[in-house]
Length: 213
Image 1 (cartoon, rainbow, N blue to C red):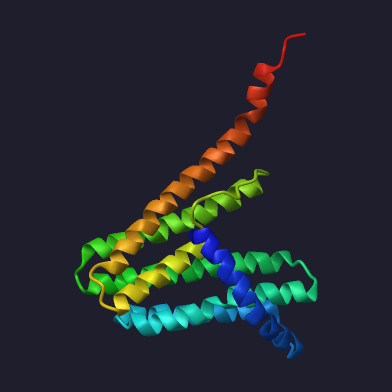
Image 2 (cartoon, helix red, strand yellow):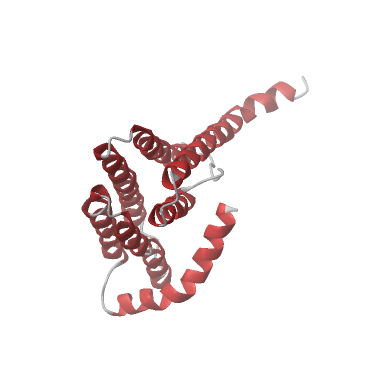
């Protein structure tokens, strides 16, 4: 359901944000500049507001900043270019933004001496980074690894829902969402490692099953 929601939301937002991307290109703004600006926005929301408990303001700033993930991609497509450096920059900025979001939440709960949410946030931070790393490492080794129940888009949607629950004073709502995200991320790590394992051992199985000549 989360994947379907993310695909539908991306398709809908693209119709709104594509003209924005076109306007930025006409103004001479590069996709890389938009990528960095989006990350700076996330850092402002997470470190400037979430760490002090202003989670509602942080949620708004981070959500708006995350739209740059769609805008910079649309800008690159409209320019008709594939830039490997741009892809590297985008992935690197994503890792920084994710770390800031969950790190800021962990810091805030630590100041409130609530250790369970701290553990949940740190586990989300760790597993989210590993989910992305396993895919990148697998593809770097020549495997395909486009599997998993939860990816970055779903994590961001999930933490956004958690932020809304916190805003409306739902007891332990944000903490429950984080534990769920961490559990789903662990499942995704297992799915990706399992997929690569099967690909890596496929030649061995094929040779073992081949008839002797």
